[in-house]
Amino acid sequence: MSAPGTTIFEHMSGLARELGAINLGQGFPELPEPPELIAAAQRALGERSNQYPPMRGIPELRAAVAGYYARTQGLTLSAEQVIVTSGGTEALAATVFALVAPGDEVVLVQPLYDAYLPLVQWAGGTAKVISLTSPEWTLPIETLKAAIGPKTRGIVLNTPNNPVGTMLSRETLEAIGEVAEAHDLWVLCDEVWEAMVFDGTPHVSPLAIPSLARRSVKVGSAGKIFSMTGWKVGWAVAAPALAAKIAARHQFLTFTTPPALQWAAAEGLALPDTWFAAQRARYTALKARLVSGLEAAGFIVLPASGTWFITLDLAASGLPADDVLLSERLVREAKVASIPVSAFYAERPEKGFLRLCFTKDEAVLDEAVARLAAFRAALA
Ligand code: GLN
Image 1: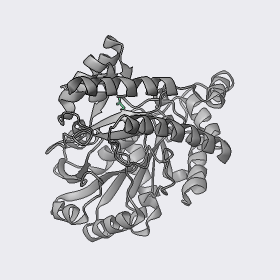
Image 2: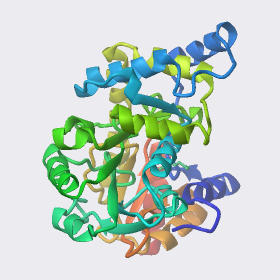
Image 3: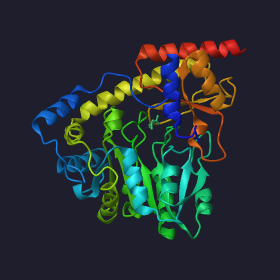
Image 4: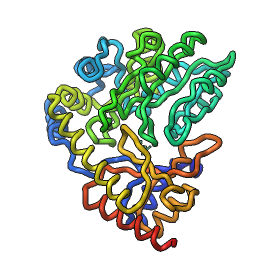
């Protein structure tokens, strides 16, 4: 999927640093960070214990996560269902290690985030890989059904999807629920982009679907919700029996997560709705800035509801349609780093799409558009 030992994100960020390129590759904001959260963490460092917090997370954060999902997604959860982890990635790892036994088959859906496949393999499992149908990136239920065999134990989902930003509808999740019930499968759903939805599409978690609620694990991330990706505070949420299994793995992965950051995340999740609305408005405007800039320059951007990314359709945009070669040329020649969508494929890659991150200030986005337009003009 990427150079051995190095993720595509590290590779591109490394090249961007080395070449002084604008980095629209790896997904992280380069914007002012929320002062409320920084102050809360500073206060917690000075005033609270810095010793091991409870293994499953401080009760205040577990309750705050349950409260946040009640408010934003209408979910009825108890704090007992929440396991705090060191980032969404650790929640994914603890869940996969809890649920996958050697010889198990797990259905993965491409484009897929790069950690899913190695985690399943490290647990001794085998991946059955199916693909969303481009360019709408819908999930073909018949293909999902056909992928399920006697050894299939679970499905990994991601909504909103990284890299392409599309979401699983309630109807699709209900259809997946029927399949999961029929074959007694668990569902691991990576929802770290749930707060980053910019077109009003409702985010639906498998935990909101009756047939899936008992068999699903929802992964969330404070680093994403509060735009501080380095904090690595996340969580897994599941029915109590599943949550206990995840906690048993978490205790031997990272055991606990820095308490000051947990206190800050708990305070952050309790911020008023107006705070979250203002943050969403800021990101909506940045996304619109990049999309309209690219479209005015004649590039074709695919529709997307969420995440920090937009997807360029290369052929339609008059660019060479090999995303890996193009992203290498763009970072060196145009000095703009991007991520090839094919890096999110384990097999049968789609090569015609490029991911760009829009969480940068307006001037940076404008300069990136100008550089991309100049690069394409020079190709003619
Ligand atoms: N989630 C980030 C992205 O998609 C990358 C995280 C990482 O670099 N491992 O860009």
